[in-house]
Image 1 (cartoon, rainbow, N blue to C red):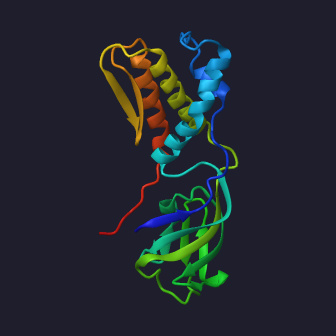
Image 2 (cartoon, rainbow, N blue to C red; image 1 turned 60 degrees about the horizontal axis):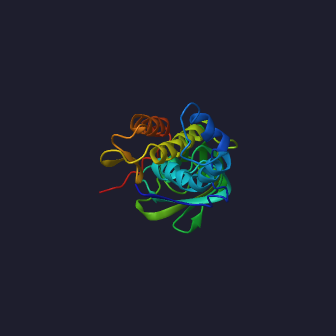
Length: 217
């Protein structure tokens, strides 16, 4: 099954704040930055990119989306999994359309706790017909408040970037990755260990939120 989300990611550029990042950095020598203002300015510069790294790795964002739509491939069964479009957690489903035909409200039901839409016995369809992007679901989904572990994951990625810069380029320059996002640091730099550790902690925190999209072969 292929699923495609169609939604606005909102205008916020960050899940975490400058203070969240500074708390992660507590105890590290960041004298490479001239003053507090210089450090905070650099953090602000990094936040949009590290938020994008979080979203890219998770395959979804963590804002609230009201009355949006997701488009999915028909499953060939009597149910659809909204999580495959990244629309989780679902809050409410307003409409279901199959091949351009909007189903009546009595023809389907939604189970918000598991993100499933299922056809009922009153439906004119026995199953969602197999097809490419032939089912559209109108729904609201997402978080009222950003999960704390997501906030901390972005803060750690941002802190890792700063430590990589502050640690210098001693030894071979290497990188650690979170999806397509790479944090570079000197392999023998004084903060090489913390950079790798913070990125690994961020990856581990985000794994539970990753969207697994199924593709029929």
